[in-house]
Image (cartoon, rainbow, N blue to C red; front, side, top):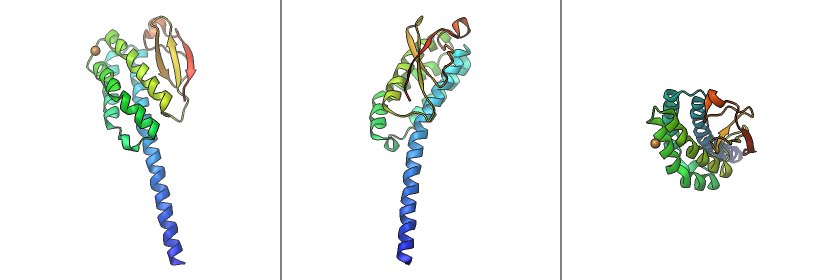
Length: 165
Ligand SMILES: [Cu+2]
């Protein structure tokens, strides 16, 4: 009887550890996505200073990802994209020039889209939006178009191309 109780406690603790591992795997890439959204929102507001600081948060989140905690497809996808994601995040974080930041945001978004196609980044839907003027994509959690490539100048230019998540 006592053995059974100990065994149940042991099994329960394994289960809890496994759920924690899955949660932390999920939250690691959710943090990356949320920081990407931070950069996106700053570009929507045409605020180069906030965009730089959010990109520096994003860079930290990318470097903090423990790949051993990710699912197999997530691990592969993230490993292949990590350098590229870091490169554009770093450039955005080191710039105060919004048009330069937006150039890098195109590549950053393409790589985030590649990641979102292979790994679940959020419990919420993730939409892939398209700006036909800039011929560039971005990711967003809302269906209302707020264009990060032009901001106020063309806030609602674009369309939702796909739902990824
Ligand atoms: Cu640059």
